[in-house]
Image 1 (cartoon, rainbow, N blue to C red):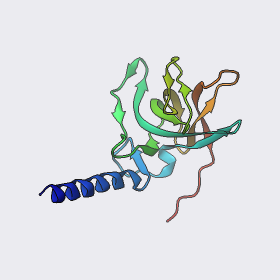
Image 2: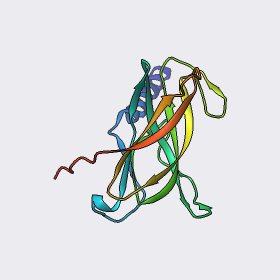
Image 3: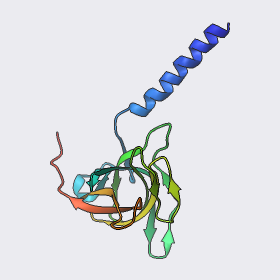
Image 4: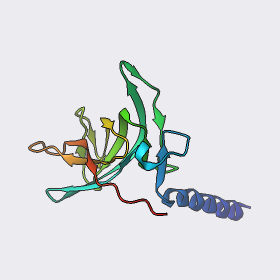
Length: 161
């Protein structure tokens, strides 16, 4: 019985890990079917700086309007995977993202040290409809191990039909 239970648990573990390697997760902040000219796209990226490569992923977002911050919306986790792309209506958002540099300790923006090579960032972004953006992390010049998150517009590729 113990051998059978061990095999079942091993298969469940493999199936759970297989979920981590699925297709990229795209998260929409709207439910209706809109043309690309009506929303912005924010993508994760990898950035190399001074021989170091930083990868990003999205944990969630909050919409910000005037003096109101809407509830945080989770876009993934360690078990299900993290969003690689967010499709947002125009406006201001507070993104929660991760910056990862494998095999190295990094210092987060608030001064904490992450020995897994992972730092979490909160990044305010203002997005316009019809635009693509990428979020990236980079080393802070003259600050050993300190990373920061940034975003920039990138060209929008034609949609495949």
